[in-house]
Every structure is written in structure tokens, then in C-alpha cells.
Length: 193
Image (cartoon, rainbow, N blue to C red; front, side):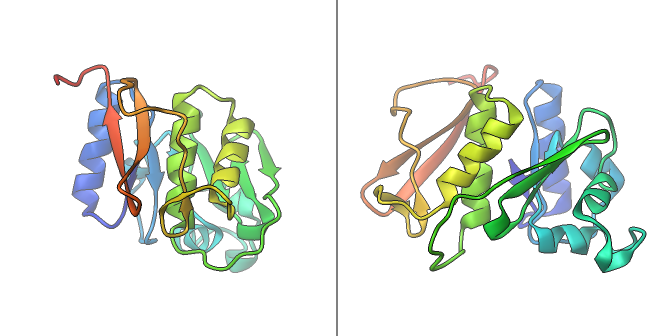
């Protein structure tokens, strides 16, 4: 997963390195900024929220009134890509060149949305690493961002604790350190440690 709180050059390098090693790539285009097509082409999954999607696609026919599907499709560079647009209380919509589908949100009393996109992307990455089908991966990510009675790893973000600290695999491990933070580690087959 990479996002735009780092330089575009660094994000592009991370995506290129992942592609070189056949790792699934996720670009969370937040904060939204104009993106060059070659950068978008490196992402297997592009995961904007609806506002970011509109900021990324101002020239789509229909402008602000263009459908989410049309705007999302305009980001696609090749057949293997998928755009997953988070829609808040309306869930999330995935869009490919030839199809799209909406996955509903879970009902929740929303108090604060800080970190919701980060939680969605982390859970989505875990689901993909576990080889969940796309609709199930989005449902899983939607479940991870809803308010929960589980212990919070970070204020507002429920923890996915199915992995223990010792497990090595291609994907993401999330676990508590103390009672206020978490660590996200990517351990891939080319790691040397």
C-alpha cells in the first residue's frame, strides 16, 4: 500500500519495486492530487474515497455529476486494474473496465471518521493477502472500519488480531504494542531477514 503523503517519486518507486517482485499493489490516492497515468498504471487497486475520486477526475464527461463508475473507469490504465471507491455510509463500490458492483456498509453510529480510509486500506490489503475474493475483501474491509467493541489498537481503528507476532507470510501483520499503538509489517518472500 502506498499513498500520497509521501512524494510521487517515492510512491512510484514503491509501486515499481512491488511490481518487480509480483506483489499486489494498492494506491490510496490521499490526499488527492493530480496523478500521472504512469503512476496510476502501477497500481493493481486504486482506493479513493468519493471526494478524492472527484478531485482526481475533474475532466470526466459530466464533471461533478458524472457517475462514480464513469469517474472510476477513467482512472483505469489496463484490464487487470480495479478501482475501489469508499462511499462512507453507502459502503464501497468496485469498478473494472467491464463491470462494477457496490458492497453495502455495516450499520454504525459514526462518531469520528479519522483513520477510516487507513483502516479500510489495511484491512483490504490483509483480505487480499488471504486471497479473499474481491467482494468478500471489501466486505471484510468495511467490517474493520465500523465502530467495534473490540480493543482499539489506535484510537478509532479496531484491530485485526488473527495473526500472531511470529507468523511470516506475504502480506500484512497487525498487532498491538502496549495498549495505544500498532505496527504494520510487510514480510515478503524476498525479504532477507
